[in-house]
Image 1 (cartoon, rainbow, N blue to C red):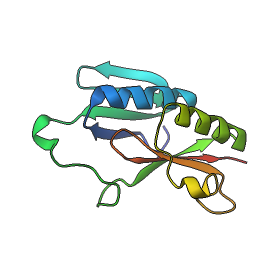
Image 2 (cartoon, rainbow, N blue to C red):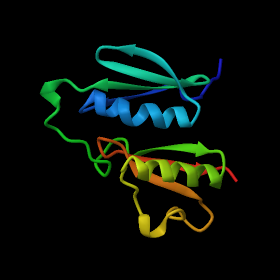
Image 3 (cartoon, one colour):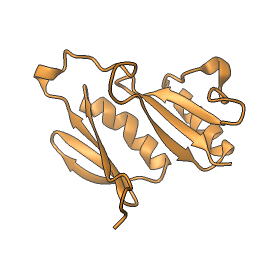
Length: 132
């Protein structure tokens, strides 16, 4: 047992298919494997932690997510190196994914933080930070 470690994160999304297209390739880049799949959702797992994505019910879909409201602001992942961040950034741009803070990239987190910041299909901020 890994007492205190994060077990899983569950995120409700507006469009499950768009979400799957975005998160599947990205999580596989980080070493996650598909874990579960059902009509209303899917998950990916790395070691003991998994991330779940569930289709928001129609009656709740008119309330749009915004990362600056109360609730989840962003997810941050470890990247293996600055080279990995550079390669990931190229792939994000090729997929026309909105990279945040372009004017300060890759040091938007400060001069000692080599990272890429971007948005998923629901505009949630995602961050990948180099380990070195």
